[in-house]
Length: 337
Image (cartoon, rainbow, N blue to C red; front, top):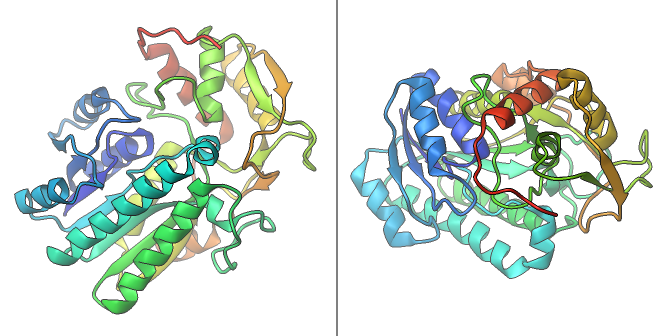
């Protein structure tokens, strides 16, 4: 199939493009490169040996999106494009609501116009709010603790309503947890612009000496060691979950958690990184970050049961692959905090 991947030059999107190509699909990428890099597209081509089409556009732009749909016979869409930092969303709510909701509506509108009925949406475990762990797909969604999570929940509702109005429209809502790691080649991985918002690239940049210390946001949560607990999943496991969702997509709305089902605290991840790579990661404990919750991990049994998908790579593999990419990555900008 010809698959349009919005945000396909980003971290999760680029790894999913690799998995899609390896599964026999053809890729069209749409990305405005606001939090991604053109080099990722070159890496996709180098790893897979396949060319990909690329449109440098903002997918909130209806005219630009329609041009992509007119240029290719698209069979399905995987929609990643969006702003994604929890803390930043608290500071810039209007920017997040506009970008994330308008992009979903513009892409869905184009799908309706051009009769594209396969739609996989990049949602998030944040839609569960401060629910009881492990999170299960049948839970009622609680008001989330940040605007980023609200945009994901609202986008889910938009796509669900579209599917109800159009029975031919098939939607898979993938609620995934905390992606880390990198492709085993070391050619592609997580390389955020500026100071990282996510834990693993912060850890790797401290290990590399680009940042002096890791900041651990809070150590007074009701968790195993007081630091936040998350379900860290290898990005290639996550990418393969998207392929499974696409290849098994049937009419209606389908919701899946993509996670390992295991919670790991911040300090446990730091210790795993040090063990896997034989390198020290200095850290300081600082105040909690706005919008964060204590624990978040998945019940991923539905994805295994219905899609035949399960995570395969453990936390040590996530740490090794992340460090391999960071060591290979050449960034001319040295970050100072």
